[in-house]
Image 1 (cartoon, rainbow, N blue to C red):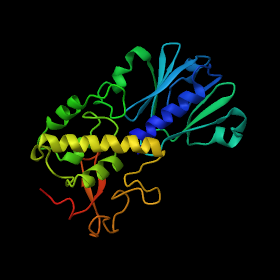
Image 2 (image 1 turned 90 degrees about the horizontal axis):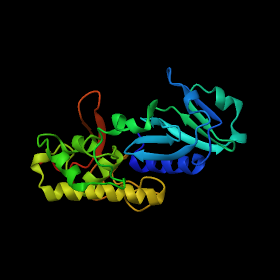
Image 3 (image 1 turned 45 degrees about the vertical axis):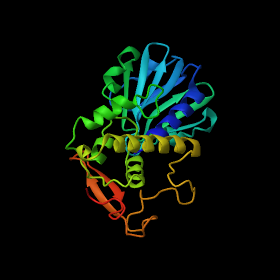
Image 4 (image 1 turned 90 degrees about the vertical axis):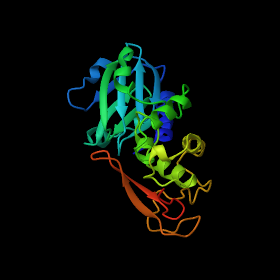
Length: 263
């Protein structure tokens, strides 16, 4: 699933492509969602809130989308959109001005809400690590409100803080030498704060790089994520997978049993 940095990059790309121009095409292929409600409306802004995309229009409506596991938005000139793309079963949304098209592929959610009611769809989220209104104190309070919860599960819960996925949960936990199953209550507040700040730092670095990166090396960008069965870059121990969370929200993380010993 794309993480906060990828969603923010997507929002900025959509905003640069569509803002300020009316939609000549608004074809939404998601149940009974009526794209005609957006036709001829002018895009005011496309913003990211955690992993959610809010496409605000001047008619008081917002197109709310979520990429989930496999979704992505593609932008290209209208003249480059092919008939095959228009017919593709994976196309969930097609938005276009007179010059630029945005194609939403395999989106996990598509809905229209009134802009004034956006809180109904994103109000449950905790502070956004990449948001302009980031509130560290509130995020820490949210995390520490359930001391028996495993720290990895707490970090992945978007109600505590928004923007972290398996990449930027696995990597900060490794860098701060914390086992994913460590109970929140077993960690001093300063270690939790340092962990959150590390995650935020990695998201910001990845915004600069244009793709996820923890090590600072483009060819070998990760310490643990996606490296199960390979040697730890720090100690050489074979990296393992671990499952955190309860069904259906369980997630798989990679960790080093030596660098991240169980508490």
